[in-house]
Structure formats: C-alpha cells, structure tokens
Image (cartoon, rainbow, N blue to C red; front, top):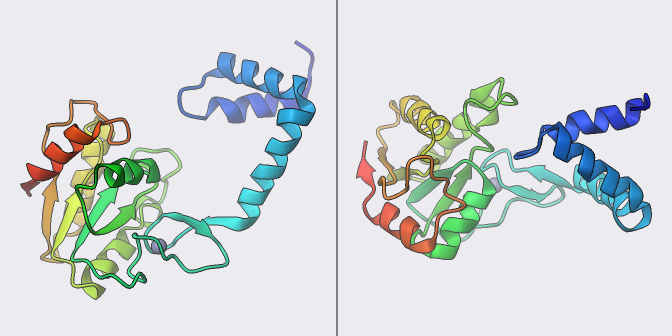
Length: 202
Ligand SMILES: [Zn+2]
C-alpha cells in the first residue's frame, strides 16, 4: 500500500468505532473517497458542524446545541418535576426506554462505561458529581441503574452505587429479564417493561 499518512490516520480513527476493525475501516474509507461529492465532502462538513454546534450537557450528559440550555426530559431545568432518575450508558439506551413508555422521570447519561478507555477520569466523564447534585437539588427518591447486563455495565452500576452511598437515596437496578450480555438499546419494549417492573432495590 502507498504511504499516505492522511489515509493511514483515517484508518486508525475509523477502526476505533464500535464494530469496526482495520479491514472494514479500509472499505469504508475507500467508499468515501470514491464518492467524494456525495459522501466525503458532506460528511466532513457535517462533522465540523457537530464539533462546532453540539455538546454534551454537563449536568445530565445528553447531547444538545451549545447555544441553549438543556430542556429535554433529562435535565432539572424542564418544567415538569420528577422524583426518579434513570441512569443509562448512552443516549440510544434512553431512546429505547422512552419508546417503551415504562419510565417517567429524568435521565442521566453516563456517556459510556467505567471501563471505556476514554473515561480516564471516570468520575468526571461519567458525571457522577453532577448526579449527586441532581439527587440533592431535585429531591430525588429513587435512582434506577439501567446499565447493560454486560460485565462493563454491571461494574459501572456497582461503581455508581458505591459513589451514591452517602446520599441515602433509594437505588434500584433493572431486573435480569435482560439476557446476560444484553444491551438496553437493542432490547425490545416487552423486555424493558418487565425489567423495569421487576427492578430490585440495592
Ligand atoms: Zn442536561
């Protein structure tokens, strides 16, 4: 292969995405380069728009335009007040739970698990301090840990449980209706509803 550092770097970056290795990264990049007008250029523009305009809310972890306050279900800033917070790994988990309509309350999006390599400063990146503040400020009476039934998800749930031990809030965890290794975002509504209904106190 020719020595093209731009392409090599791109392969390295794309290989870091979920489910992709170097082989599929190369295929994706070639597809993009061969479709310069239809894919490559709009993709580059869109990515730079995302960098410029979209950020993570530092309170609840959801994605939002950086010019406005968080006003979705997540944050305490919404007018409707809730007494429960559901803690999920990713925004796609929130979408899955919302579509099942089983939960009415705030969400707290960790942005990954404690084992993610990007989470070098876990407490800060997972917004644990913010979660504690929210529990206090919003008179939360239950925190529902809805992390995946994977080793990483369960380790993360334990870490959060430990971090919250001084708050005296009730902590519960989704029931193991979720298959072992099961991820929230890919679970069907029935499985999620049963996991919420049968959640157990920790
Ligand atoms: Zn927010």
